[in-house]
Length: 116
Image 1 (cartoon, rainbow, N blue to C red):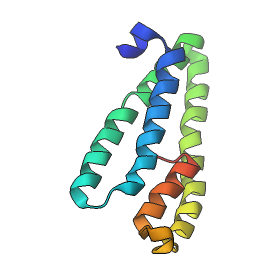
Image 2 (cartoon, helix red, strand yellow; image 1 turned 30 degrees about the vertical axis):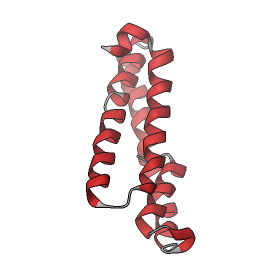
Image 3 (cartoon, rainbow, N blue to C red; image 1 turned 180 degrees about the horizontal axis):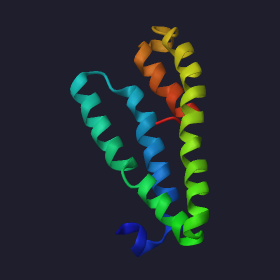
């Protein structure tokens, strides 16, 4: 509903920036209750991205073209997951470096790989 009111050119970039900011701030969480709160707000921040993006694509393409565009859209997440896993594997080995635990480095690596 917000996307329809303010337009995709404002809503989607703002949502992605807020989502990325919350993702980055997760590395400062120190306990499990903070982690659950951070993940809750991260879920809220990202909840409208996929429906909003697909809605925006559906406004530009016909039904026949939309299937191909949706495949390309979802392939991006799969490619990001495969390369993000490599970054995350290296991040797990950084435990204790810079005063951060392994899982905090993992969150940072996820942010760098744009895999959320």
